[in-house]
Image (cartoon, rainbow over all chains, first blue to last red; front, side, top):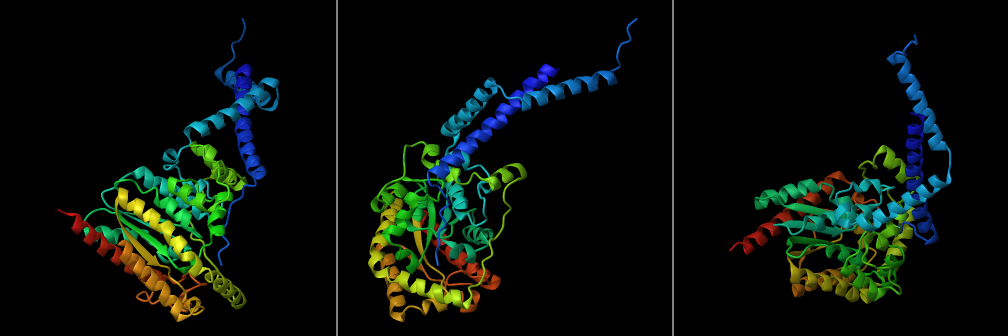
Amino acid sequence: MRRFGTVVGVALQIAVMGSLLFLALLRLAGLVGGSRVFQYEGF
Amino acid sequence: MVEQPSDNQIRPTALRLFCTGLWEGVTQTSAGACVGVVVVAGLWLTACLLFVTPNRLAGVDYRYWMTVHADHQTEVSFRAMRLAQAGPQSFAVVVFGDSATRDLITDWAAVEATVSKRVGRAVSVYDLSAKGMNLIEMVGLMDLIDDGFNGIVVLQIGQFHLSQTEQELAEIAELPRLALDTPVYNDELARVARAMPLRTGNYFVDHWRYYAHRVNHKFMKQLLLGPIPEHFDPRQPLSEAKWKKESEKITAYLANYKDQRDRNRAILDRMFERLRSRSHAEVVLLELPENPNALRLRSAEMIQDHRRYLQQWGELQGLHYWNLNEDAGLAPDHFLDYVHVDNAEVESRYTDLFADRLAGLAASTLEKDTP
């Protein structure tokens, strides 16, 4: 049971950290690429 | 004889063992887990490249991507994706405009109901208005209107739109706001921009920046707790000092009008021509609702010249020109600033007038088309 828990734990860690890594890299790429929300100033 | 543990004794032990293992698995790092993390990130990227398409996004609740209420560009992008996904319809109305339209026509269901009732069939009305829309964004979205479209296209237009400079139009090449592009959007942008944004044909590669700058703590919170609620963004009335400053800006901005209007009109004419060649669309130019105090910053001659220009344009191209501002009785105290109305009675009156004119045009168009 402990082994099964470890396997689930590792899978969970990989899934969460992998997803966060993807979002972080996307965000970082946006920042490096000078990306920002263009808000029209108008009048 | 060995005593067998009861069920009650077995379960907590198994659960405890599982939890211990789970904690170890979650907290202990290993080379394998690190590789796994990179692989999962790669899988997300691959999935985005393969599966993120406007067609799939059309069904998604776009409010997850709206990290601020005023992110109208997200709203119109996703609504436009839905319009494109819906394909040719028996009869529909699509309205393009900016924040002036958004603030004035607040009950689109009422518009839809009036038109549907008059023509005796269900007519979908798509509101694609967003604040500060530039002409290239408008025609870009208009390009999503399918071949074989049958219905009415309304374009809210005023002196401000026809005064947009090339530099202003080109800003969206550097800082795109919409979550999509179309052939017309790209063609028109290429005419004014020094460098075009990357276009590979892969939606995610071409539009990753839109998503990248929306991935923040608010987005993460919305992913967990639900999307941003529907909310009308209330504007604040301008103070006297601010109004004075704005007036100066308006006057300076409209100084471009005469120089820019033919080039801007050509952008729209090219789109109308495409629209006519592939669909059966009646096009309406809807005059921008303006604060009479803002109109007073211009000479009466300039205003008349602009109205004549739109009328002649309409006659020449077979477009309808509607100016509902006088009939709606727009007065300075109905406005917060130069174009934004904040008066429920006026909003309702304008919406009724607009719906009525639209219903009349829809009925006559359908009558004409009936053999």
